[in-house]
Image 1: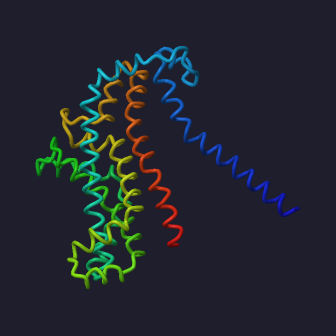
Image 2: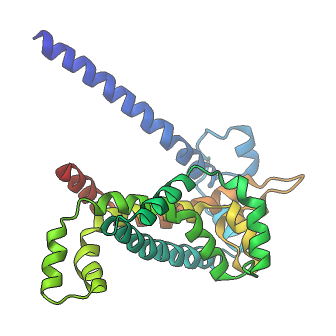
Image 3: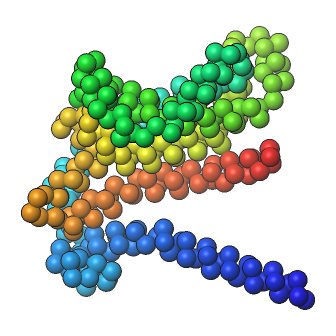
Length: 277
């Protein structure tokens, strides 16, 4: 009975901590959604209160003010191409580094992992010089190459750890059956990487979709993404919090849908990882 009492008390404390953590993370979403339906004066008076009327006026104004369909498609195109490139390049690179553990590959792995500790702010000025020198600014391939450069280390590192758990015998059997090296990877190995691929996609989608610093340095007005467009609501003398909240609420909807669609695969990835462990 005493052991059961201690277990119950510990469980209760964990549940309380879980609820508090959930409130901490869900709090910003509450303020975002609630204030997107309120007038500016009501937000300034009490940002935590519920709106008197749940009107969609702010959404209509924000939709027109930033030309939401255009900036939305810009964000979709940049995010999709960048994430696809990161998945393809980082998975192939990680596979090569795992299956060919030469001294050069080990050194390359060390350099890529060490690159993750370099803060982005420290390379902003060199990045501006490089993008200007190679005429990458204002071009779609320029922002994609930048995202590949900054995202390849983490993506490759995640793939590297997962590929080491893939049995080599499967690949050897495929080679005996006449499968080419590229066929072994794309037909045999890559389908087994679905759990970690989903993880890599989610991490990079959240990063690129919400990123502000890199686009503001590289892209032009014609390629404005949602984070850059929302900045238009904040001027020197006026801050349109009502329209900004509405625009940000609209921008979170695709990410939430993306997460819900991949939720099943996320759970499968966690289960697969625990079984392999």
